[in-house]
Amino acid sequence: MRHRALFVLCVLALCVVVAVRRLDRPPGVESRSLGDLDPAFRERLEQVLTQLEHRGFHPRIRATWRSPERQRHYRRLGWSRLDWGLHCATTPDGRPAALAADVDDARAATDPQRARFYLALREAAPDHGLVTGGTWSRSSRRWARYDLGWDPGHVQPAGLTSAQARAGERPW
Ligand SMILES: [Zn+2]
Image 1: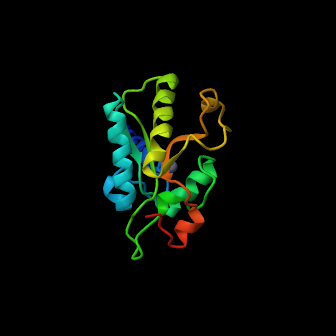
Image 2: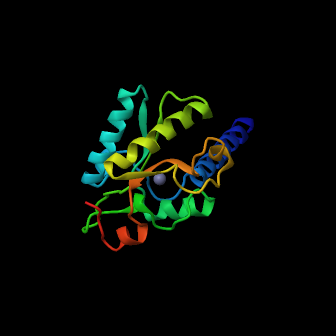
Image 3: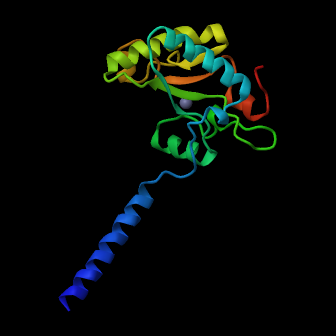
């Protein structure tokens, strides 16, 4: 009898663990693959990252393509201001072809080190037709201290709005 009670308790505990993990998992999908980027954007991004490697940084891709469902989730969390952003761009037939990537430095362990990378990223991007969220409004106190905009690891084509991209416009 005691064994049976213990067994039931274990099964219940397992159910709770599974349920909590399911609730934890964000909706939609997000990729880290460079293959999910628009090819022309990818080429330019890689040029920037190579340049930063030569300067001693260790660039790492955190996110490339994101489904609109995941994007809306981030908006609800306040991490993004858009329901559909350049991370969500696809080819005309619907395959992932993101026009944005989130990057950081794999070796940076502190905010001053991260900021040094983000400042170098912001400086390198324009030569390749790109811009970073480090140029946006300084509304994050964490990054404003380093004169950086609120999403300094975000890279995208310069002069392209998400509305234009959603309507099918491409910068190159
Ligand atoms: Zn981003």
